[in-house]
Each structure stands twice: as C-alpha cells, then as structure tokens.
Image 1 (cartoon, rainbow, N blue to C red):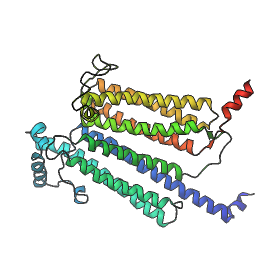
Image 2: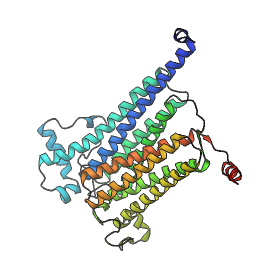
Image 3: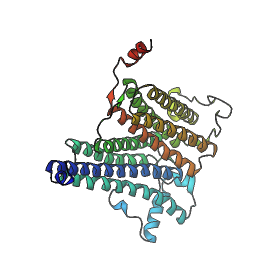
Length: 373
C-alpha cells in the first residue's frame, strides 16, 4: 500500500489519532507520577529540617498564599510559639529562622495542591474529548479521590504534633507515606496501561512463580516503606550509626520495651533493626527474581526490569548505610528517600511486564527435563 493510500485510509487515520491520544494520556500520568516522587522528597526534607509543624492551620485554599507582610509573618510566628515543639526545640528562634522552616512546609503543601491541579484539569479534558479508554475514567476518579484523602491524612498527621507532642505521630507518618507510595504506584501502572500496546513478540511469557514473586516484591517494598516511616517518626536513624553491626550487636540489647508488643512501633532500636532486616529481605527477593528470570524463557523486558530493580535495591541499601554512618546528613538522607521511590516504581514496572506477558506452560520444566534426558 502506498503512503498516499495509507493517508487516505480513514481507519488508519483514526487508529493513529487514538494512539496519539493514548500516548498523551500516558505522558500526562508520568508527569504526575514525577511530581508525586518530588512530593515524597520534599516531604522528607520537611521532616528532616523539623519544618512540618511550622504551619499550625489547615487552609486548603487560602493556605496557598504565604504571609505577605511583616504583620502576617508575626501572626504565623505567634501561632507556632504556642505549640510544644517551639518551647522544647526552638525557643528563642529568630523570625528569619522561622521563615526558613515555614517555607519548607509551605512548599510541601503547595506542591500537593499543584499535583491536584495537574491531575484534575487534564483528566477532565481527556475525559471530555474521549481520549480515555473505556472504564478508565472511574479509575482516574478513584486516584483523584485518593489524592484528596492524602491531603486530609497529611493534616491528620500534622495535627498530632500540635498539642502534646513535639513531633508528629510515627503511626500517622507511616500512613501518610504509605498512601503516597500507593498513589505513586497507581499512577505508574495507569501510565503503563495507557501507552499504546506493541505487538507481542515470540517469547513474551512469564512463569506463574515469576508473576507471584513480582507481586510479593511490591508488598515487601510497601512494608519496608512503612518501617522506614517508623524510623523517621521515631528519629531512630540517629542511634546505632554503625554497620553491619549495631554498636557491636546483631540484635540491639534495648530492642524490647514494655509492653513487648509495643516494641515494633515504639522502640527506637527495634525500628532501626526491623528496617535493616527488611532491606536485606527485599534484596534477597529481588535477586531471587533475577535468578528465576534467567532460567525461564521470559520476555526480555521482564528480565531487564528485574535486573534494573535489583541494581536499584543495591543502590538503595548503600544509601541507607551511608545515611546511618553520616548521622542522617540531609543530602544523603534525601537521596535515600528518592531512590526508595525509584525502587518502588521499578517494581511496579516489573510487575506490569509480568502481567502483560503470556504464561509459560506449567509442564515447561518437566518437558525440558525429559528432553535433556
């Protein structure tokens, strides 16, 4: 068929238009996912600079405007002086020091608002112009609702540090961070789903075990994210700044507190130990997946995403060790948080690759054994 004939074919033109529309939707979702990743990093900076409690009110609309004059700044500063954190940690701080922590928290909240607009407005346009696949509109509405809930969870977390505590609750921090990763995972999955499909090639298959392992890795990483939030909430990264031992011990002597079941959530030593052990477990799962994909006739994309995931896990563990040894230096700690989000993204990409491939016949290994015999 000539180029002129192809261009005159209305079916081909319609297919091209649909493909271009789906690519634009996918790129939009990747942009939103990148903003969520940035939100995770800025949130980490807000926590590490002790800035999260500097804004003591939740104003979803008016809060987008920072103080504009000296009187407004003094009003915000006076409100901060009334919470326990000021008396315990920042008594006597200057207005310029207050502005520093205020702008970190304000930037975090502003980025959250920006993500809402960057998601909602293009979503309405794509839905109105029919560029979304059938059924995806409701799914995207669910993601939008989860994002709105995340904003409420953020305030729920901040409010825990405004009356009796000098920091936010580690339980609420864990909920906030885990929800952020869930939103990130849903966005990445949706972006992969929206990209126009490519013809399946020979060998594009995955074994049931590889598929199950990919899903198990996702679950393990989410547990690790939650454990990392407990380390952050309890400031457990500032103790036992040695590796591979914890000040010469494998299990720290102060792991257990009373009552014992609170140790997993309240003990500083337990929080760090659990986070370390889960990191090794995630690494073991990632390398097991690499080994499994090397033995099966899987699609190259499955094998490659497993390898990239394993490499990212190794980098993340190295950054975690560096964060400990350097006593939670800001740039290293933020890199650790950013790469943690990247590890999760790669795990989602790998899971998607396994789910969109065919399945290796159950008798593959048995038939291979008979052939070799």
